[in-house]
Length: 471
View (spheres, rainbow, N blue to C red):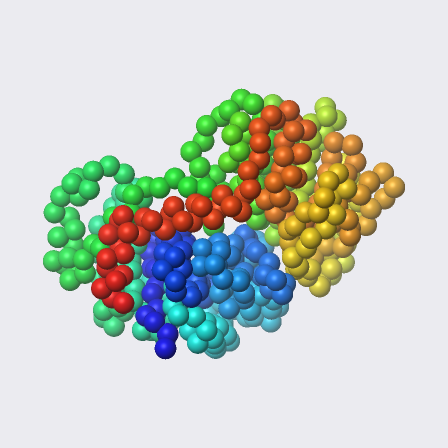
């Protein structure tokens, strides 16, 4: 029989729900339980590809690593990938669903809840315990009648819920009290404890505030989670580490609109002596050793933005100076001669930057696959594909990755393979071309150690004792 299902709610977005869900998954896994993470509906352009080609949010991918289970579509049955301010691609059980994407937001619930509840039921039948993550806040009273991701999963599983507030931002007790007060009575009763996240300093500074909150609500503050710097990927904020300019190797990461899968550059950001710099204007490219154009959920619109803001011309000038330029997926498509959009998947045809002798046609069929391919300057590398484009190379571009996954032309490289920098040898070679003299570490082993260290917060914060009481 399945054990108690838990749910992590937050007072706000970015309260730390994804991180704490990962901590709980590893905490239970380290106690010998077969545990699975779950988020009914996620909105993010940071996606991962499962073994069968299904797409899920990168946060659920990380949580699966924390739980030591194989990632699958049931962990995140609905993924919304924004393509503009008013439109998102809808991924249902790992595959794009154009019918639901065309359905008005407030009419989607009858179509999506059977999918979500079915995935959740399969997980509960397979795993000892499911740790669910909410989205935003459960107290959005305008959205409660259409809820799919906060109240509905909690009710469906009779979950023990834990309400998290980011105390580092201030207003934590007001957030907790206000969220509790805005919930329906039946859902207030599900809250087993309040969690103060990202706390700095002496807990004595909280004074009698936890007691005041319990008197008002009947719910105790069960955990004070200290502010914890880590190297785990963040779902929505890439530059989450403490910034410290090294002065050794400076790499510009161009952040155009709809940039995606930025966490794949974490292995670079955390190398000693490497400064990965976010760039949104042409001036940011004046004094760097390398430039990276990441993937994009709307490549044509992102390219138009680069041209409009003078960043495209600055990239071309930098390449002419000999600066190393790398484009990943959509970024690679931008470096080419042209992009054709015959099916109007994005924003129409566009000329590329002309730095790489390739041309791309956007196709309705979406390629999603885990891959192991030959790297022409070394051994095999692993990663994943996730793109609509079909790219062909001209005579000036030489093969960089096998199977049509990457080309190089002088100091300009373009690849379709995401997660390249998680490959230790590839990261080492790339940085050495920039004059780096360090020694790259095994990124996957580092992440595993970080998950273990982060999971220890469950006990040190006091949350572990409360979990044991609830069962």
